[in-house]
Length: 70
Image (cartoon, rainbow, N blue to C red):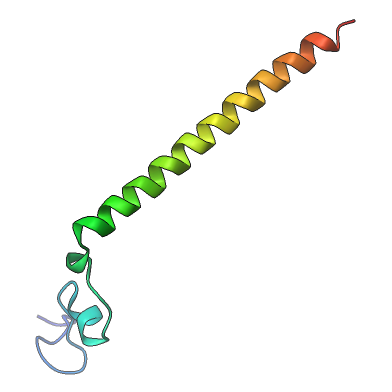
């Protein structure tokens, strides 16, 4: 097929994860359950923290609206 990359050689496409393995980087398959749990805890805590900040700011805005009506 004209224009298709060669199956072998310098212009060949690498399989997913193969390029990272050739360059010495860990692939996604090498994440342990502890790593995944740590990521889950980190992003869940970010979600809770942002929810608290948004809630505090909304209460603050309503408070300022009512105190400004005097």
